[in-house]
Image: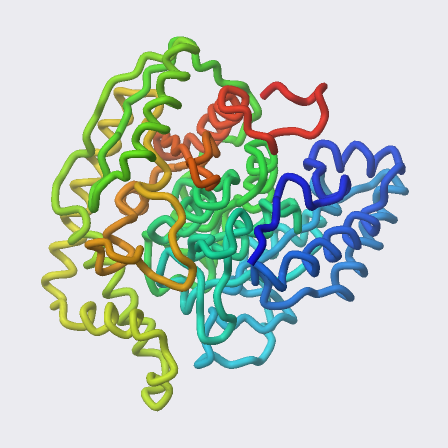
Length: 477
């Protein structure tokens, strides 16, 4: 299978950023309808090879785009992101769409309401292009399912796109949309962002409201996946806010999502270089070390740090596996034979934990989260590899011939930050010798999403992210 070069394939309209689209919409030189048509054409072009979409809503997208065109023509857009082509993962409710969670065991009836994040994007005028793929119930960090098949990495179609927001990452990097809604319970935004070479932001828990509540509880986050940090900030603004259906969100007020730039000079950074589980691939380690040296050359003060606490993989399993057990309990037993065997396995392990085990794990998690808050109080940011290894063979949960049994064992740079709920963003920083993207993770204190994304924009310039902007006059963060 021939790869799809993400840098070359998309036409001009599919490469424009939010700022550029808003500018041409306001001037009337480009229509949201033209952009929607070009985006759908691009999605149709890449989908046979990559399998990023479960379906494309051509009629709905063009109707929404036409309404956006009228608003821009009248000088009354709903927001700065009115008319921006957007994809939604098959795990969030969308009114009128069939949301199957990547499973043959779920009903095909269309949803009768939007999830809060979707509703906010709709209210802002986003144009919904289509639905992106996920593994069954978003349970693993690669994307394949009995319902939709295997989602492949456009840089090398033999490799995985990562997951569980794999379809969203592929759509983003190939230009099949500007905004892409992902979810992240253990790395499901950040792992595919790393494998595919895009920006993926896991917000502070609760900044983006969720309904219905995830079976995986408060490790599950909703966030933006885009080609550059500025677009991620624009999408996060549109999705964020209080929703009374989300009790876990709490009533706290998060800092405003400002656009203030962050200079790397003088910034105090903790370098987390060893994963909480598994091992670091030597080539990945060398490439991230080189990226950190660029930070130091830019004036950042870098110190090596270790995460507080121990046995973090076991701690995460208590939360993730019991969540899987809860999800499985809601599925008719006579359909369990259709379910991904890996999901069944972790659900059965989760069911074996006692209630006492789970409460103890919640206490341990609280201790770890507080320790992470204290660690972040001593640094402006933490940085780390996005993943401990590059993308491996598509259709597999773990690499061939390795010591891993479950995906969680190679996701040691992602799942701890779900436990502690800090914002974490992936920026592409390099390519492996085999031509696969390498992601660089930047983590901030809870609530500091805007600062993390501003720092990510500075990192894009430092690392020469080809997607950060299209035009020279917008090349600075």
